[in-house]
Length: 482
Image (cartoon, rainbow, N blue to C red; front, side, top):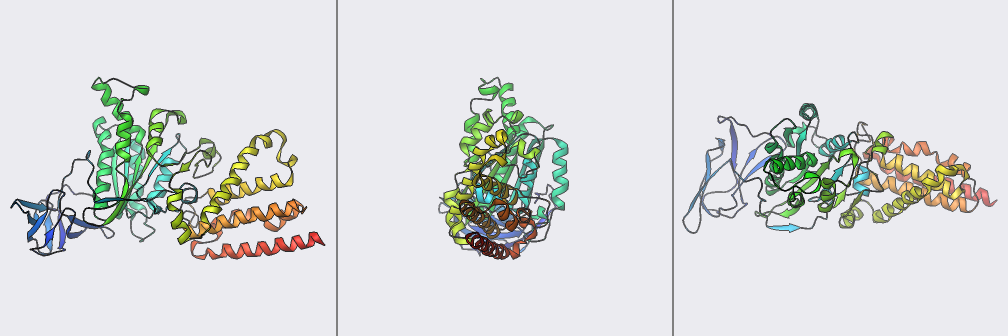
């Protein structure tokens, strides 16, 4: 979506009410088809309210044409145009803030299941260079169920931003099969642009997000990267000769970071609509040091922490989010949605899978010392199931036709399959069934490939596979008894 600077550009306006109607701030005066995917709703400005004494007829108008006139109780007149202005550093008011209890579905299993983000929530995406921050943000922009995407390239290298500007218009929106750009706003601010523009770009993005939120849309804002924005703050503070604090950043860095993320949220707008702004801020800590000030302050003011790991990226494990250091405080809030939409035991499945990964991490050092073959069968089975969860669930191929996006029901089915197999295997090895026979029945490489071989619209096949495997395991158990 692009605001044309050409004064002769005209937009087709359709009124939503008639003269004489009483309106309040946030009421919808009319609509403009901005793109094939976005209906731009012309709202009554925040400070205007009263009676509509004139509303333009349906037709084409320039941005500065008056399309409505409102008179308040004191007789003051407000001329409303298609173009409205707002100071970007000032938060737009809302009617009421709502609980962020609905997940922003991204289609990325490690995020949706392990570190969920609620609509209206905030997430930090820290990681060293080459860990996959930009690729993951592109995947989120394409696959998340937000209606409007705002991508802020703050202080990035010019060639990277040029690549984004070239790629996004060519991407197809999976929800509508139309160009993704028809519901995307790109704010390009490269490292060679003025430092003041770099500092303002973040505020421009969040204000646009609030503007579309007030129209009743669910908006996702991707900021790449907030570290460059913080560096711009540091540079401006240095020129103003302000007292430096940690690593030269200004003392007000924490308050600026907090003020930015606090503008996210799921709300009831002044006009009675429901909208949300979800903020995902990428952080580029120098040398991957998560103890540096920007990462630390961002972690304080966000409720989901998607920590990218250089080791995982080097091992070609994408998304390279470390399941030991990442976390989300939205899990309890969205659990009821997952239980209703996918399975009542979603939270329990997630907990059991996390326990397997935690025990695997504890055994890692021991395996390095004595080798996996020296462990008892019960622990060796745990290691194999942890590998199954890592490679068959957490790892995801953003370029694969099937695996690029995973619907919630398929995520839950895969997780149930792996957790149930872990439990069955533990029961079997405890009763003395050889681990080799168990491996032959389960065929782990085939199970790892289920994420790619089972399409989203055939996810029920996973339940059938689980049923078959349970039957085979029971038969193996009977053989052992005889």
